[in-house]
Amino acid sequence: MNTIEQPAFCETEEKKSRFLATLVPYAQFDDTLADLRKAHPKANHHVTAYRYLNDEEQLIEHGKDDGEPSGTSGMPCLKVLQGRDLINIAVIVTRYFGGTKLGTGGLVRAYSGAVQAVCEGATIIPYIPQGTTRLFATFADAGNMEQACDRPDITVQDRQFDTLGSLIEISGPRDMIADLAERFPTLDRDNSD
Image (cartoon, rainbow, N blue to C red; front, side, top):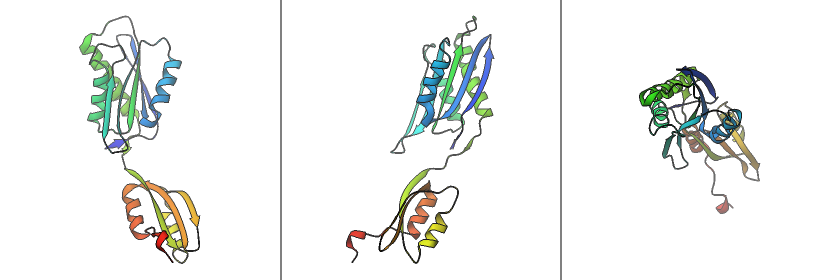
């Protein structure tokens, strides 16, 4: 699976209709759609499609036609995201009608073409599942734990110290987090003497 970290934009045209495609990380979808509706109040349609993993790791995906004939815009946009194996991502295609009807086949081609074009211009990166955990080290081993966590893809969320040692909460790639959790497991501190 793949994803993006930064939004991308592309404009295409079909028989004088303009298609403004915006590709964003799913977390930015609602705000971006609201901003585009404000920025383009005279646009005829704001077609959307998204794919993301929810908290239970279930794939949620949807395409919305936003007033275009059923199945001619939202689903073709979604199919492009599926075909490129993109996850945690959303696309919004804002359409300005150019005066010439495109027909159902023309709409499918125009919307899917706009999404293909914005995907071509986007910086696509591999999707790496993220996670968080808590790690513990005695004061004698705290330096090793800090050094193991000193990586650009690991973020220290919290640090606490007590009489037993150092407890930190970290986030980062799930596989790496699991390895660190095995090396520096948290203690059952309620049972310690």
